Amino acid sequence: MDSYLTIKDILAGYKEGRFSSTELFRYYKDRIARLNPTLNAIITNVDHQHGDFLASQNPLPVIHKDVYSTEDVETTAASNILRGYIPPFDATAVTKLAEANFITLGKANCDAFAHGTTGENSDFGPTKNPYGLEYTPGGSSSGSAVAVAAGLSPLATATDTGGSIRFPASLTNTVGIKPTYGRVSRYGIIAMTSSTDSIGHITRTVWDNAYVLNKTAGYDPHDATSAKVQVDDYLEDIEQGVKGLRLGVPKEYLENIAPEIEKAYREKVDTLRNLGAEIVEDISLPHTEYGINVYYIVTPSEVSSNLARFDGIRFGQERSHFGAEAKRRIMIGTYCLSSGYYDAYYLKAQKVRTLVIQDFAKAFEKVDALIAPVSAVMQPKLGELVNDPIKNYMLDVLTIPVNLAGVPSLAVPAGFSNGLPIGLQIIGDYFDEKLLYRIGYALEQETRYFEQTPKL
Image (cartoon, rainbow, N blue to C red; front, side):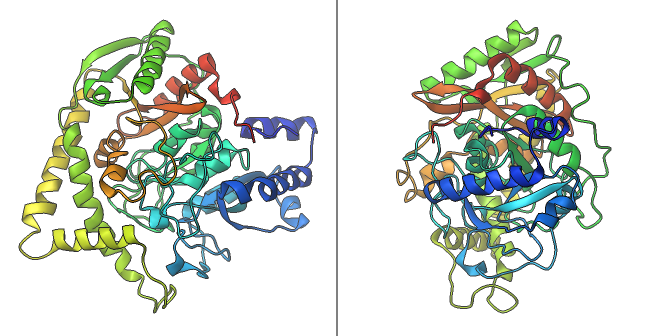
């Protein structure tokens, strides 16, 4: 059986009778057992009986990031504090995928409470990049990206608060969607920054990614921040191409980036131009430089509030402690929200956030979408940045503005440098995911980087 089946491949395989659901799931279980001890992408395996497959029509595999509540399956947020916590319910996204015949293989490793950019803040140990085991796969959705990149599952759910889907997707040659804020319900997801958390997923291909968003998107009465906006059919126009589209190059996103990233990015912009898109070079998002400062006031402030519930009384391990990054964010956030400092920090940050939002609004008056790098740097080596919080925070400098504005962004493969993947992001206006998939699919079909798999 092919190690790197896509969802589309599996659906075709069922239809053509090439394998049974039992054979498919046994294959993935065996592959996880063989590769996960090295990769550390999955921290909880879910065992199934044969009846689980019979009860579902053509079941599909999924691995859920361990911040997704899964009924009767341990959910730890990769933190010792929550070891042993068994949720009594499923997150809405888990329920919707189950209704669409997805069966859970396991729970993916991540930075504890999703606090991190490299996957090294997990209390279960770091996840390793299958394209180079000495390198980080990016975070916080490290296990989700690696599970897909290494062929442990064709789909892994994830969350993106400041780049936590797009960054690891970019570093592992996978496709990751950060939907419009409120497009997918946050109900049942262990919250990080409630005003920027976006619920998305990682796949090998753009078609697969659109297929999954068709299942998870939509209003949820359990989540007051979910949007009452009609859900598009994200596959409907996916093969329409980019001819006639105006795609903008935001100049601030090209400042101080690694030369190999700029080279891959420029080549992909030329590819889109050759496919018929009009490339608009003079797009400016002038408040981009302030995004990182705003984010690291807003995020710790909301983290300090959200983590207050983990007191070891209602749930959580009484003798466990928060890790260094959680403590750091709690202290910064509590300070920013304290009497006498709220106006100087949190309120001012929210005012600058409004300027970031306005930057995107002005840009989308001129273009249909923006094409930008995901990261300014190549994959750090494991251990290289984990003890330097500031350098860690700066890894998200090109992804954070999207979260502050709440607009959608799709990360797609853009090439390789010395065997290590590079990605780019396609940024759209609110609820314009359908257009992002159309652009991403055109680029993917021309470049076909998804065919370059890791040697494991």
